[in-house]
Length: 225
Image: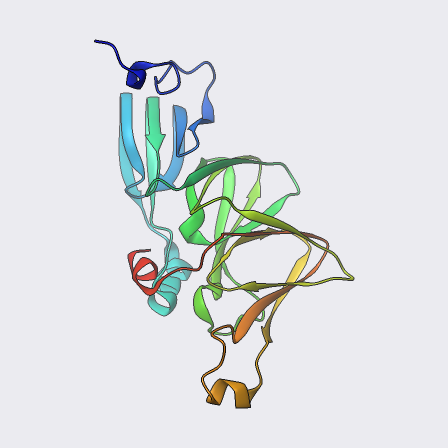
């Protein structure tokens, strides 16, 4: 059988090292030797001797789901083998987190990660009860984190002299040393008259980077996540 479908571009090759690698722009391959974690339902294929177990989110996770309709339901993948992960054909990225790093990520953008990473759901300071910015996932420790983003993300440097304002429905995450607060860009009078649709943003200040997706979350997608 001959076809470009069977070219090396699409063909899955045996893993050369344990852990996480990009299979292609839309999927991540994980060579499991022990245990790793992924969002529930993200596994698209596997081979080898692997078991999948549901993981709870804890009290903070249940509260997040109740308030925002979002969450990060996890599963543990255990054993020896290879597994592939993807989510709605979104673009995939691998982030190397080292000791001392802190990366805050919206739960809807987390695909999979090493069990060596510490994961906690925390309240975003200053976010009140606005949009999806109330709770986010904070990763620390040492290991690799697989992220997804609908489209190509925009990474914006933040400095102490120049804060960045981000739509709460578009923010993917940000690095340590950034403080957050809500910023109102419309007057009350403008909002009463109908407004521009861009009433409140998340303001980030400090020294670091903020990651933004090139689209806002629609009400339908927010319900699915």
